[in-house]
Each structure stands twice: as C-alpha cells, then as structure tokens.
Length: 91
Image (tube, rainbow, N blue to C red; front, side):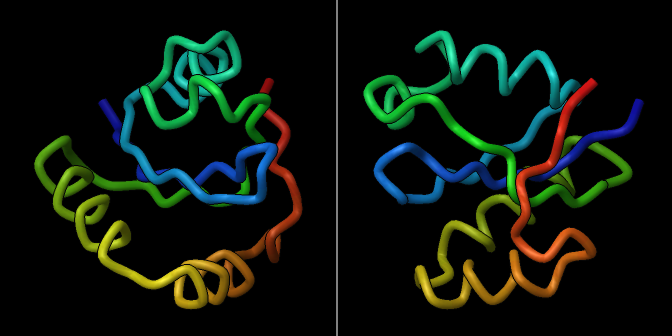
C-alpha cells in the first residue's frame, strides 16, 4: 500500500502537512473538521502538494522533515511540484 505526504492550504492561508495512505479520505476528514486539530477551524482546505512514499515509516519521516521547513521553504517546495501550487483535484 502506498503512502503519501501532503500539504494543504487552509482558508486562512496557512499550510498543514500530513501523511496518509488515502488522500481523498483524509482531505474529506479535514474539510469536515475531523482531520486534525490544526485544520478544524481553518477549513475548507485545498490540497496543494503530494509526494508518494513507499511505506508509512518513510512518509512519517518525510512529514516531520517538511514540518521543520519555514513557510517560505514550504512555498518553494509546493511551487517546484508538477502542479506548481495549483489546487490538486481529488477523484
């Protein structure tokens, strides 16, 4: 099963980084106020970055690394992705 690290942009413009094995379910949970305490009052969120990881352990490590980045560094990471910061549609 594939895991992903993701970044969402909250309605207040802040970023939240997480990891999951089901992006659609996780984004839905964030938008229903059940995803994380941080995003509960900052919805709706928009998915702006995803990065596949081969397993949960590596996803959690990568998530921790991204969370240590400054806002400017996170924005640069998002902009360097194939979607270039545009909202990623989930099917």
